[in-house]
Image 1 (spheres, rainbow, N blue to C red):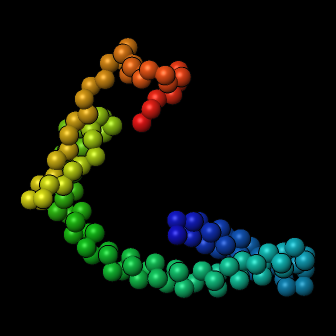
Image 2 (cartoon, one colour):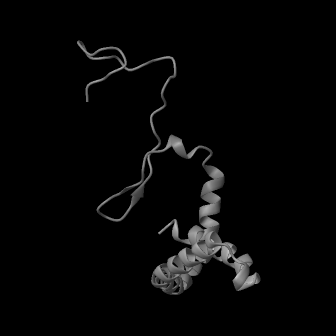
Image 3 (cartoon, one colour):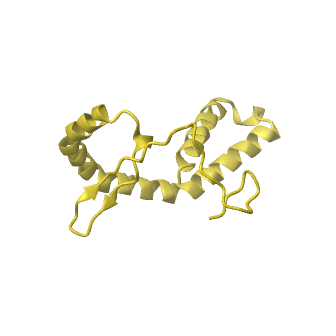
Length: 124
């Protein structure tokens, strides 16, 4: 689905110059490419319609979410300098969300290897 939009944009860009030329002066390669992209457009049309429907359905909800939570998220982003220093959020049974900071690691110390494990490999 992520590749859908770039393919459609490429199809439109390539189809515009092709329509400006006369029909009789096109080479077989140009005609083949035009037929290929027309078929691709027809195949993609239902998926694009579905995507537009989803955008219309979720658009107002996303705008409301951004209007309400945007300032709070911006404030949080200003306070947190390095997102990689935190664990993934954890949701507790009561609905609270906890974001724990990862324990600091000293770059000079490396984890000890278990006995019998070759260097560069660790047992899990």
